Amino acid sequence: MGHPVIDVEYEQPTAPAAGAACSTRHAWARVPPEPSQDERAALKDRIRRLLRERDAVMVSHFYVHPDLQDLAEETGGIVSDSLEMARFGRDHAARTLVVSGVRFMGETAKILSPAKTVLMPDLDATCSLDLGCPDDAFGALCDAHPDRTVVVYANTSAAVKARADWVVTSSCALDIVRALKADGQKILWGPDRHLGRYIARETGADMLCWNGACIVHDEFKAAELEDLMRRHPAARVLVHPESPAEVVALAHAVGSTSAILQAARTMDASTFIVATDAGMLHKLRTLNPGKTFLEAPTAGNSATCKSCAFCPWMAMNGLADVARVLETGANAVEVPPALAARARAPIDRMLAFTAALKNGGLPGALVPRIGAA
Image 1 (cartoon, rainbow, N blue to C red):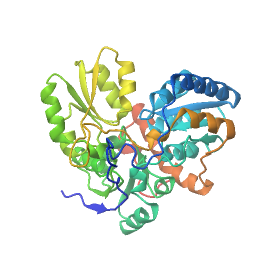
Image 2: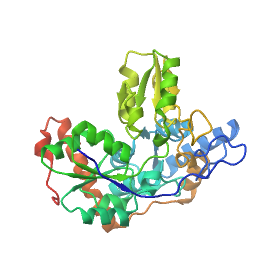
Image 3: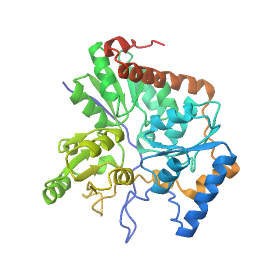
Image 4: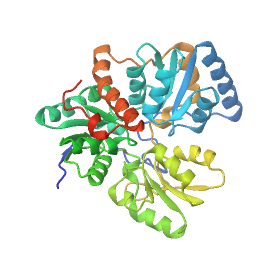
């Protein structure tokens, strides 16, 4: 079965400046300067105090700087994927959430916690998947295919989520799409083409896929990965399904960030090659101190280094900006209430599905038809 693709152009990284090591690491980002050890200690103390004073909690993604990951967990927050971050913030008693990640994560937190103040270190921290899927163009595609159930990845704007029947994460997408297929539904998927095609291969679902990509995962190269595997024959390869198909084909385990963490903990190996954002390596190494984790290579015609697997927007999150927004209330995330209500419906549908599935529900009985509330 063919899987049609809709092409969308979005801005690409500019060529690296003379002497620069990597074209994607700083392509769009205002990466904050790395503080000294004394500055780092002072900033952490300041943030700890401000979190207490402001009745606030930090939630951080696996891909942000290790300082932000460690400080979130140390002060009662969480390090996780985007939906777990938002769900934790919704259920936590704190009145203010500080979201270290990218903008769609802050929006999702606000959608699930409309009464709370949601702050971000930098509101310009975004995502190529979000940028590459403008809501007007995506809405036009939805209008052109009213017979398809619209399923969007969490890495999208609130406006795109509002056009969806379902929002999914990489950890639940397969289960939800399998259930939709079993119910006879055809899918309109957005925005990540690699993840969409992976799901289509695994489920056999009829999927019309938007042509978006994560600039980090899209850069992994199969030929370079095979070379690294030859040099480390005992290593196991862990791959996020946002990666190209030829990279996924080399994996010993494919899955979301949480699935990668589980695989590293449970697989009988001491060395792993990891094909996802290198920010993930901090948590992997912390949880598995006796194991070795290597970055999967991104080298190729578009890169000048062996591995450039760092999201430039995730790198925009820094300690100084966390302290600043806690002190001033700047960078509050706002989602218009009517839009938030429409965007929340497909998120709630996903959360209800995954909760029922976890409790032993039958997937076919959990899938409403298109347009159901």
